[in-house]
Image 1: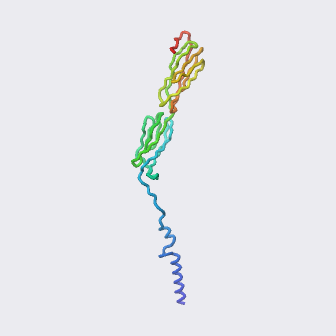
Image 2 (image 1 turned 180 degrees about the horizontal axis):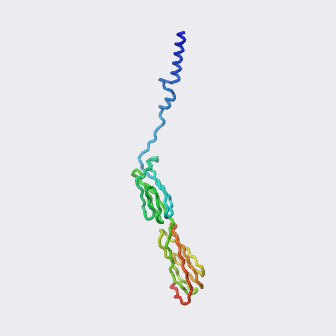
Image 3 (image 1 turned 90 degrees about the vertical axis):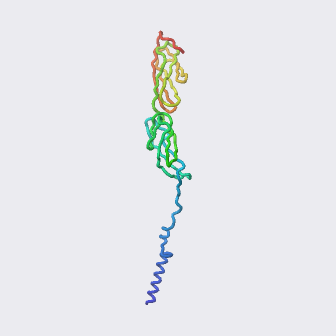
Length: 215
């Protein structure tokens, strides 16, 4: 009977050791102790990517973000130490928010970990100040020259003329030549290459005593 108990005890001990594995460490413990793979190493920031709205209308604003990357293209940091605009009369930037001031373009820059990156923002829209100069009254069916006077905006102006009566020709560069046998209204719509617009109209009457137009 003693031999049987002793034998059973040895079997139990052997089974326990087999279940625990070598040196009493379970397979689960082995898995926990095993390394999880190589750790990613991120180097210092060598480049910065800046993202802002590519186009804004005057009077609006939008968010900008910047990310720093190491030489291997791994994300390194998003802590921006400074923001700047190359043309504050067009767009300003503060705390990662860019604000559109006037039509044109500006370079928005951000510095992350001592490295600077940039992007370009284009500001469109806004109003042009437009007027039309030229003679009124004019003689019946005598050709007279009219000129669009434009201020504001930024870029190349384009002109579109309409004449309510009579005939005329767009001479380019903001000049329009018109004639009529009756009074008419001359209107010009102007836009610049950045989307700013403006318009003006002029009423022209007919008189036999009017000076002959110097055209």
